[in-house]
Amino acid sequence: PSSTEVNPNEGWRLHFEVTPDLGKTWAITPSLPDPNGLNAIQPSILDHGDQVLQAVARSKDGGMVDSWSYDNGKTWGEVKSFGLPNPNSGTDAVTVREGFHLLVYNHSQKPASKWSGPRSPLNVAISADGVQWENILELENEKGEYSYPAVVQAEDGLIHITYTWKRRKIRHVVLD
Image 1 (cartoon, rainbow, N blue to C red):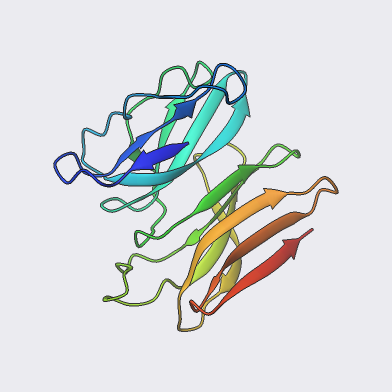
Image 2 (cartoon, one colour):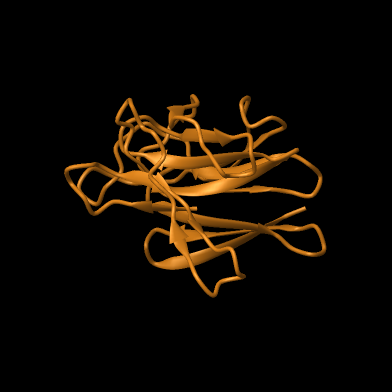
């Protein structure tokens, strides 16, 4: 998953970078359709099985957004808001081997920038289907910026989350 945010005439756009030969050569796909101008970047991919993929991303103009593929990523649907707030702050998501999806994001509608205020709170949500999300944990809720999360599931099944803590440190949280 990838994105472009440098062309002011086209806005922010989601696309993918694909390799047919294990990284020897690469191609960039066309941008995903964004008819509502949601301006999304920095997608994560969730795997629903049976060639169904979901790209979830932050948006400048619509909270959390997604796009769905039903052919293992060959084609993608329109970018649409899926109901979770986000103040235009980085997110990350992963499909865990137990079959559910986990999303780390700022559950706030306040615009996020160094001029307008902090990126707080920082939350963890889960979903069985990528449509209905339930917040299960608030990692941070104090004043400050908690941003740019990364989430992985380790071989032992533990979930590891890292994120910037008040722009001073990197915090590492482990979930069982």
